[in-house]
Length: 325
Image 1 (tube, rainbow, N blue to C red):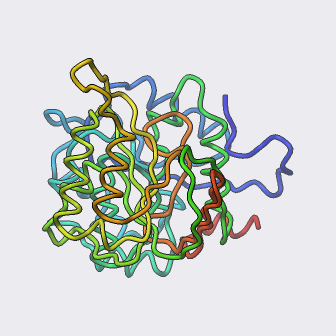
Image 2: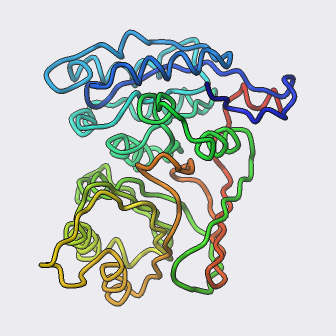
Image 3: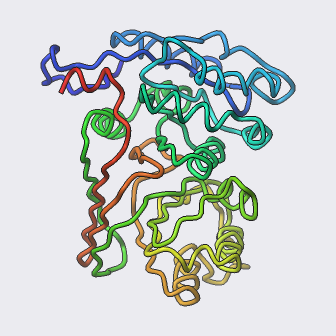
C-alpha cells in the first residue's frame, strides 16, 4: 500500500480528493494494475468516479472515439466536478479526438472550479491542444495503471504529485550531467516529444516564445529523437525557446553501427544548431521516478554548474487541496 501523503503529516492536513477517471487513449491491457491503482487510492480515502471505463474497449482503444471524447467533454457541462481528472493510461488515440474537444467550454467551466487534468505520454496531445486553444494549464503527471497501480509505487513520484497539487509555488531540484550558468523565466511547456512533434503545423501546437521546453520519450533510438528535434528546429520552434530541459529517454538499444552516436551527441548537435541550452537530468517521463509538471505554468529555471532548480507558479490547485493548506 502507498500513501499520497507522508506518514508524518497530520491527518487534518490530508487532502481527500474526488478523482474521476478518463480514458482518452489506448485500452488498458494491464487490468490488474489499473484496479490495483483504484484500490490503493480508495485505501487512502479518495473517492473514485467513472471506474467502469477501465474495462471499456473498442479495437485497440479504451472505447469508441465518441466514448473517449465524452470523458473530457462531459467535464464542461458537469454540475459536480472532481478535484482530479486522471488518465488511466497512454498508448495511442488522443490525436483522434482533438478536432471535437469543447475547448472553450472546458476552459470556461474549469476557470470557476479548477480541476487537475492529469496524465502524460499520449495525453500530451490533449494537454498541448488545450493550452494552445485556451491557455488552460494541465499536469504532466502520474497515471492510474502505470504509476498508482505499480506493484511498488514510487515514493518519489507520489511525493512530487502530492506537493505540487497543494502549493502555489513549488520548486524542483536536480543535478545535470553538463554544466551551465542560467537564470531565466518563461512559460513551461512540452511533454512527450513524439506527441509534441505530431502537432507541428496544426492548430493544436502552442505558439510559445521565450519558453522553457521540457521533453521526454521512451523506446526511441537517438536518431529518431534527433529527427524530431530537427523537425522542431526546421519549423522555427526550437530556436524560440530559452532552454530545453531533458527528462528521461530510456528504452533505446544502441549498436556497433552507431559508432558513438548517442543521446548526448544529439543534445550537443541541436544546441550547436539552435543556440539553445539543453539541460539534462530531470527525472521526468516514463520511468517510475517522475516529477509532476504543470504544462503552461510560469517557471523560473536556475542552473549553476551541475545544480538545477525549477520554480513553478500559476498552476491550478484543486479545491480539496486549498481546504487543507
